[in-house]
Image (cartoon, rainbow, N blue to C red; front, side, top):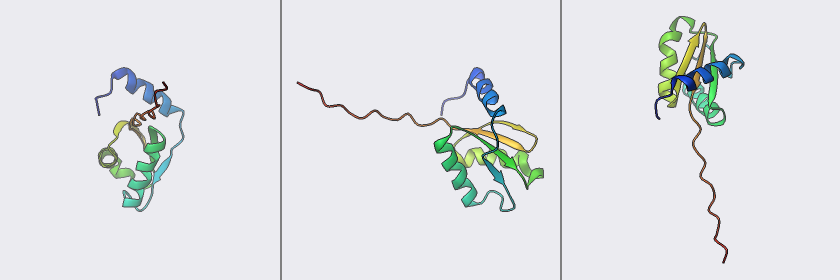
Length: 100
């Protein structure tokens, strides 16, 4: 993944301000199920907001781990919320047969 420009980061932060948390880190922490759910959310939405309901003391170390485990980038962490970004893969256009 190419590094994000400052302008892109500003745009993502602005978008994140308007979002509600998509997922919450609960008492199970960063379980395999949680990572899978986050990965799935990133497939459908390039920007995902995660709220730390539990593990609030560990959020500074857990946020970068979430990004690493899902192949995303940590855009920001404010209070008990982290915002992750992963660009959607560019869909290849279907091949069109050439008409004679």
